[in-house]
Length: 159
Image 1: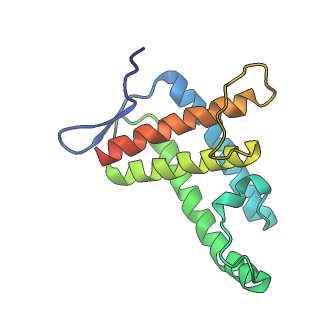
Image 2 (image 1 turned 90 degrees about the vertical axis):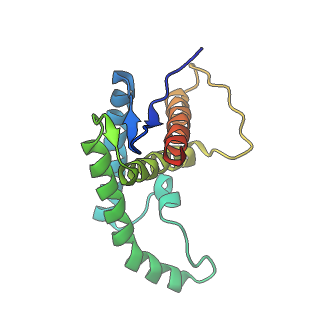
């Protein structure tokens, strides 16, 4: 079945956005969840396991250096991610995006994928058949959806 691309480069260099109402509803459901998790990091100062991949370890063999790094970088990483979320939410109904906005979209969609993938313990070896009766079905469907969305964003950005 043919599916229209949701993001497509135009002749003038912009990216045309063709998100369906369902696409927008999915993003409107996912974005606040990521924001809430990130705000919890700000409030508690600790990174919850699902967000661990968003705050990578710089010094795995030196706990003191790692603690210093996280203390110095966490606020900057959080601010950047929250700003990107703001930008995506502000352009969720846009019909066109510039390259900078597409880059922000790619980052946010990837952050969502990483977070959900961590919860699901996704690996590169996983070849999952989506089963609607699986208790994790909604998370798997969201992960699959975000994977496709990210691929289309990358194609449009490169296109």
